[in-house]
Amino acid sequence: NERARFATAVALALRVAAYNRQEYIVRVGERADAMYIVRRGIVGVRGVPFSCGRFFGEEMIRDGQWRDYSAICATFTDLHVLLAVDLRAILAESRFPRSST
View (tube, rainbow, N blue to C red):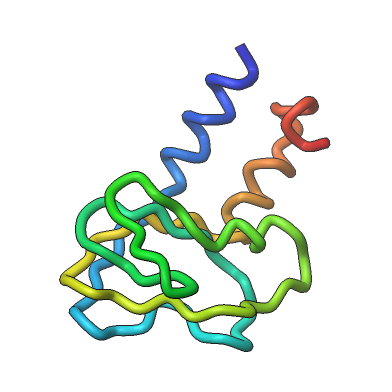
C-alpha cells in the first residue's frame, strides 16, 4: 500500500526538537523550510494554542514560501520536525508516484 509506505517514510524522517518557554519556533518573514507536530507542551500559533497532535508549518510543502506568522512556546515543548529537504528526498525516490502529485 503506497499510502502506508509513504507515511512510514515520513515518520522515519521526523526529527525531535525541544524548546523552552517563551522561545520562538518560527518568526514572521522566515523561509518555510520545516513543518512541526506538537508532541508535548503548548505553542501559540497566530494567537491560537496548539497542543499534542496539532501541527503547523505545512506551507513548507510548496517551494519558496515564507512565514506570515510567528509560533512561540507557552510551555516547555517537544516537537516532531519534518524538514522540507527531507520530504523532497522522500518524494524524489520515485517509490510514491501517487503521493508526488
